[in-house]
Amino acid sequence: MIDGAIILASFGSADDSIRENIFDRLATEIKEHFPTFEVRQAFTSNFMIGKLARRGIFIRTPAEEVAQLRAEGFSRIIILPTHLTPGEEFDNKIKPCAAEDVEIIPPLMSEPLDEKILATILDCFKPTPEEDLILVGHGSPHRHNPIYERLQRLTGKGIHIGVIEETDTPNFADVVRRLRISRARNVLLAPLLFNGGVHVKADIAGSWFDKLSLLGYKVRVIRDGLGSFESFRALYIKNLEERIRIEGCNLGGRLRHANK
Image (cartoon, rainbow, N blue to C red):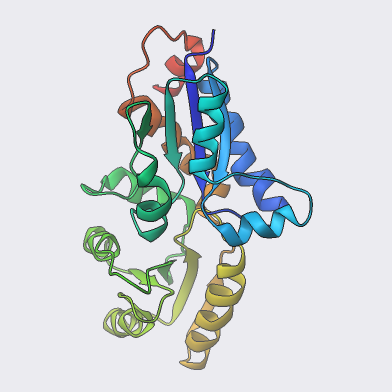
């Protein structure tokens, strides 16, 4: 018996290894925990969708996937975004899909921010005792997202939150000011991103690494996005379990095990 459909909605990636090791793996884990739900994937980036289409790989937008599932007869659809924060992509590409038959689960880093999420992130990226940790998110060129500053207030000494977008805050200059206060000389750069990809290569391991090195810091970089870590992907499973009510669905031992 199929109780409904879950759409795993991501920004997207044209990198085959990222799709296989992050998006496909999470989709498989969702299916294992919710066996009576159809699980589909959708991308919000038209650029990524077009790039993949030219290679013969076809992925729908969330709105297109909702329409397809309705055409197939599904009357209950749940959209689970991998976007970490409720930013522009979520607001413009996912929220408009909300309807009587479509439930949208908020991004993991929505207000009120769950401190357990920060604990999981810190467990994924472990600096040495000599290193300060810099977590670099995307940010927005059009509107400020206060989640990053909220996350900074939750962190302890030696942890710094920054964003790639130079017009948003906390930007690179903000992070450097915090580093000077902490008197750090060794830093660990890690992506506050679900999947790394181009932003890690060009921005985090590229410009941020170069600028910090020129300032005299000894820099180490982690290139894996948060979705690479099983413990972080498990947060999405937990989010589904806690935020939706599944009636008449036999989740079996997998759900009971996940709650331990």
